[in-house]
Length: 233
Image (tube, rainbow, N blue to C red; front, top):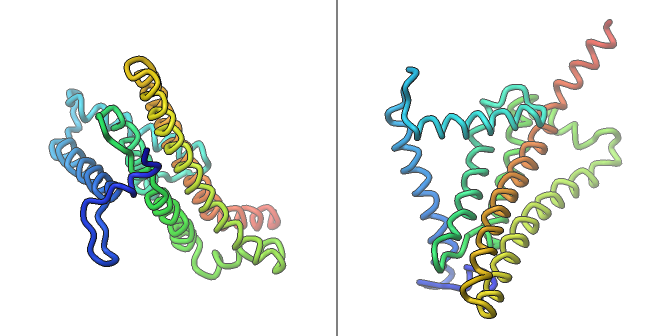
């Protein structure tokens, strides 16, 4: 029983390896790009729209509203990144209905890459919102002594994102494999249904946590401005 899709190797030369994780990741990316292109190429602003556009608007509005609920008032700046994370993880986990499919989110390399993208996005959005010096000062808040602890916090939450997503997806795959050997016709159907539910929950949790981290980075300047206004009053 394979614990990770990384173990299935199709081609290897030196340090270059093409495994199942890489293939499924690029396949999902291609699927998302083609689907997005087909849906958005004929968008309409009239009352009568296609079912695909209607579904797309529901997804976009849902993600936008969730970003607002976290505390970001202008979700347009962040919906591209947050929405991509959510859809990639969601589609990756939903495709378990395909026989012999192994989700790339069951690999530490994929979940680690997703977590690193969040790690890089937090300072990117923070600097773009408040400037480089203002953002770097947040690592010294409330005192200079907190600098190493704030850095450790950034690294630890990245590891937490990686392990949380990887652990849940991998454990679900292992349970299905075990039950498949015990009762090959009954339990896999139930576990696949539970796996779909878990996939939705994990995509939601990962994207919400990423939004929370970004919201914390971009809200520092706004909170300081509000405090200054209160002091002036």
